Image (cartoon, rainbow, N blue to C red; front, side):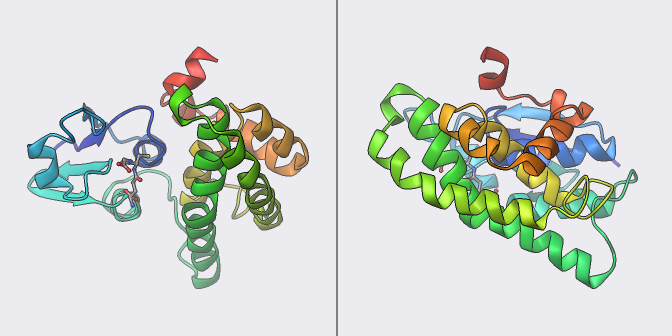
Amino acid sequence: MSVPTLYGAPYSVYVRIARLALEEKGVAYALEPVDIFAESGPPADYLRLQPFGKIPALRHGDFALYETDAIVRYVEEVFEGPPLAPEAPRPRARMTQVMRILDNYGYPALVWGVFVREAGSHKDRDPALLAAAVAPARRCLAVLEDLLSGDFFLGDRPSLADLQGAPMLTYLALAPTGRRLLAERPKLSAWLERMAARPSLVATRFPAELKA
Ligand SMILES: N[C@@H](CCC(=O)N[C@@H](CS)C(=O)NCC(=O)O)C(=O)O
């Protein structure tokens, strides 16, 4: 089948999650840049692919898809390569639970609440919003540490849950407050170090990581 094209930008958490799934499966893909923050808004032809103007979106042959969860599960099912999702109902449900915790509580608190407000672009920095994010971020890290069941969320091999979490916690660790909060969680910090060393993470580093 044809090489998939992923539309997005290398600074995006959700684009990186999709890239990590492709990288971990060993799938060759093209990354097509999309500037969703252009002054005139997302390009019109991109809005036909993703009507909400968010990144990423995927095109594979004549099949187009958006929503990162749909993309990573499609990648998992369509391509050969190491499995990234367990078959059994309980670990599969646990994986989904971790992924949704990360979307619903992790992304707002860890990325927007801490990283963007403390270490993001100067116009987005905001000490009051940062202070308000500390308690939810701390709770989220405690829950995630509790859910780690070995070297990875589901034991001894990475799953989609680990790929969902690594980009979010990588941004968190780029902010001083994030590093302090992570230092309270040694198991989770060791997990992040393990994830950061994986070739998939190395190949998809955020521009902000390369600058740090
Ligand atoms: N539910 C979407 C969320 C994707 C998302 O929020 N992407 C961010 C970048 S990490 C984005 O496009 N933000 C632009 C905006 O909110 O205008 C998905 O899972 O793909």
